Amino acid sequence: MELIKKTNIDFIGKRKISFVISSIIAIAGLIGIIQVALGTANMGIDFSGGTSVQLKFTQPVHIDQARAALARHNLKEANLQDIKEGNKLLIKVGKTTLATGKAADTIEDVFRKEFPGNAFVVESSTEIGPSIGDKLRKDTLVAVAISMLGIIIYIAWRFDFKFGVGATIATLHDVLAMFAVFFVMHKEINLLFITAVLTIAGYSLTDTVVVFDRIRENLHKNLKGSMFTIFNQSINEVLSRTIVTSLTTFLAACSLFLFGGEVIHDFAFALVIGIVVGTYSSVFVASPIVSLWEERAVRAKA
Image (cartoon, rainbow, N blue to C red; front, side, top):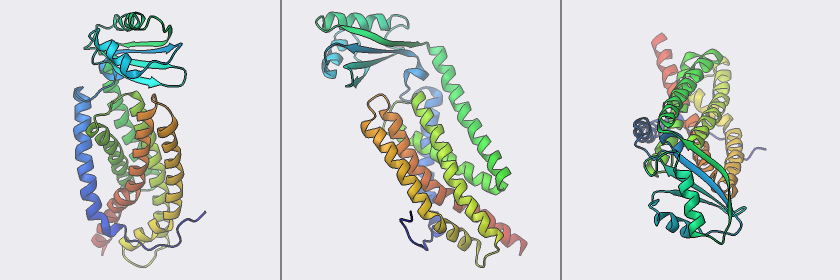
């Protein structure tokens, strides 16, 4: 299916604009990662420690009434998610609100007192101590760093070192963009978000490899013109494939975001942002970096 016919867009010529935009995104993302490392961002209980309790009621419970009930019992900072399917309610309490080990019992007591005519069962109860949360946070940052290293090694082996550096910078750009959006919007950083980050890193890498593969083919053909011309031609040749792939994946992520429910709402939102940014970086970040490097190498040989 060819949605777009043959194009001749000067993508590389717009590299200065894209570099400025990407630099702003990267700075915001770095600030977000620093806040995560320090534990001062909006951390979920996975990283900060706390208690998560999911209750299933026999009758619907309005989330505002539940929040007011918890506030009357000194639980104003509790985070509530209304799961409409099955009259379920997810309550998350940070480590600073109640001592670990007592939060779950306190939450159950509150709902028994405030809603005596609405019986419930505890579907799940998870408690994470602050030391475990701190270790998870550090291990997560290490996992992201190792994945970046693995990318550069794979691309350097598959293509060339210059391509490996370009792909790594583009993937790191996507990771920083997702951290930037969540940090600016003050969304919760949890394990689901990290799962989305690593998923998008893989998606972005796949899209970048397709573009790089066509660039390598055209470089081997010894086409006439500058290095920028060859890179532009290669990107235009795979543009239709890139748009179709990204659009179908984007629609699937949007479906999860709109209809997937509250539990995976932020996860799906991260996927939506990541797909857009990942497609952008393959064209406007990875390719321009490698093209500049290749152009300088050609000039040095001349």
